[in-house]
Every structure is written in C-alpha cells, then in structure tokens.
Amino acid sequence: MDDWVIAMMLGASIFLGAIALFAFLWALKSGQFDDEEKFLNAVKFDGEEDLNDAFKQEQKKEKLKSGYRPE
Image 1 (cartoon, rainbow, N blue to C red):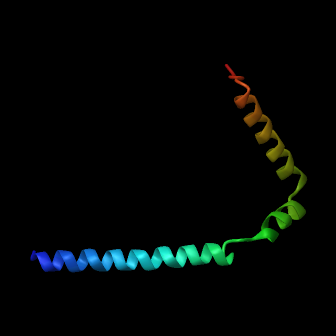
Image 2: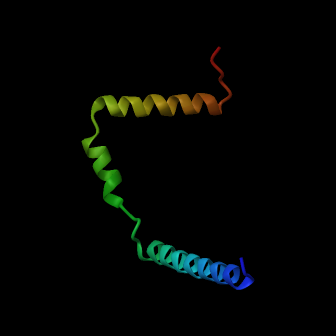
Image 3: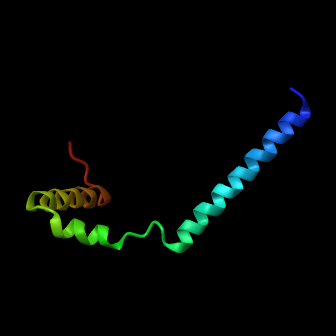
C-alpha cells in the first residue's frame, strides 16, 4: 500500500473516533444515561422471592469479605 492510503485511513479513523468520543461525553453530560425510575420500579415490583435472593447474595458477599471460606 502507498503511504498516503495508510495516512488517510489513520486520519479518518482518528477523526471518527473523536466524533464518537465527543458524542459519548455529550450524552453523559446531558443525562442521557440517567434512569432514576429504574431502581424505584425494581423495588416496587420485586417479589418476595427476589428480595430474599438478593438478601442471601449480600450475606454471601459479607462472609467473603470477612474472610470466611466454606470447605
């Protein structure tokens, strides 16, 4: 390949990457990924079994953090 083709491809990919990065940062700043209702609805509509499973998982995490290792 000629050097100008590689330089053109490199320049185009850097330009497109910069546009994607700018769009992602703009979306973060403008709150496009914020979803406060998701967590509220998850608590409202969880069943008792789901809540018990979550509690058991938290207990397991605490045991692992404290150094408990089941045999």
